[in-house]
Amino acid sequence: MNRSLLFTALGMAFLVACSDGSDNSTDGESQEQQQPRTVTDKVGNDVTIPANPERIIGSYVEDPLVTLGVTPVRQWSVASRASTQVYLEEHLEGVEPIDSTLPLEAVMEADPDLIFAWGEDSAAGGSYDQYNKIAPTYVIDNETKDDWRATLTLLGNVLQKESEAKAAVDEYDAHVEDVKAQLQAEIGDSKVAALWVIGGNYYVVAPDVASGAVLFEDLELTPANIIAELPEDAGAHWNPVSLEAVAELDADYLFLIDSDPETIEKLESEAVWMNIPAVAQGNIYNRSGTSSWLYNGFQANMQTIDSVYEAIIEGE
Image 1 (spheres, helix red, strand yellow):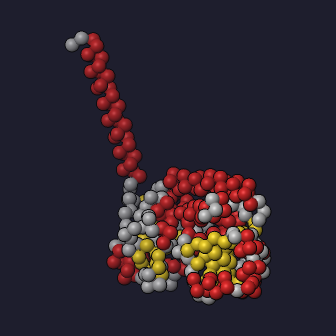
Image 2: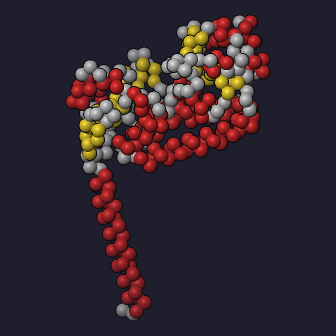
């Protein structure tokens, strides 16, 4: 064998050896990560997280789950399983609904290997032990569940998807900064409101939760009078207001969340409707009652930001 061929053969052998060593190291590391491990949830329960859980139930944590690349085996629903989180339908296509209260029989039927309980009350009164007999159950405490970033980060830690969680938060913050700058240039301090109509009643979003936090904390838009005047301890995401209060609404831009077409039609026929600056200026944006505006999370908030952008910047 000449020297050139010898060096080539030795080089190939070296590359194979390095490749084998690298693969073995990666496999060993992967195997170590995939071992079951015990963690303590936020209310003090020791929970054994299975290796690579594949059948997760997390009623109302579907948003952070799909953000992490995880498809749950059931999805949250209400109204006898008729109403689901429609804004997530592209991520949850084919996933069967389960009642938001997580009935034990339905949970057993789903055969989960990990359960996330949404809030401390969801696993109270002995129900935690019953869920835990079906599958390891991790309780998300009330403080965490009210903060979408904290919830996403927590689930990322539990499921060993920390990098995915961080990437999503970074993407969100960058998107906020981009859209916020464009909105500031377009409308400045003009006042904004979101009004939800359902069951013959009117509700305005609170300025510090759900889509209200997106509008007034993240995008730093200026809230209209009846939102700015809500008490700090209002508590609810959406707060009831009277027709008289709606008549005095000083919003220049109004997002109308439609869960009740008949009441909206009646509202639009009222003489007071034309008193709202947004109506006179043609800045009314109808959004579906099944849209992201009624929810909270990375997916929901990103969709809400895009909804605002499409309305105000693109004029849709």
